[in-house]
Length: 180
Image (cartoon, rainbow, N blue to C red; front, side, top):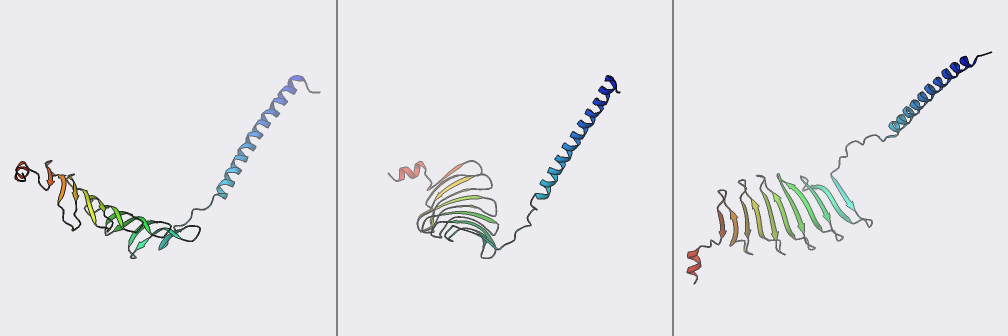
């Protein structure tokens, strides 16, 4: 017969063994679940190479594109329901352009960064002729030029690199008095 103290010791040993077994089973279950997740994880896709990506709506109409224009200039474009380009980003000869076009496809606003890293914003008339040109030179000097229909630049304002302002046509007290 087993004494009460011996019974308590044996019961304590069994409880410890059960705790270790439960801990080992729990760790084993966690490892198995982790292994299943790793095995079920989709493999990384290889790079996709294509000459163009085209976005079409549920009717098959082209609504966007990412392609090489003229087989050399990367272009990303969004088209309206009639298939007209309304927004475009184009990299051409190391210059980047963003175009916003009206419903007729005419450029209305152009944003560009030229080869020398100068930013430009042009606002065009209905005929796609630039009428307002804003730019910033290397020196940080800004300018705003108004362009006539014939391409001449009769008016504008800006700041020279040395901080002096300029204006076209030049407005001086003498020119104001001469007009009187």
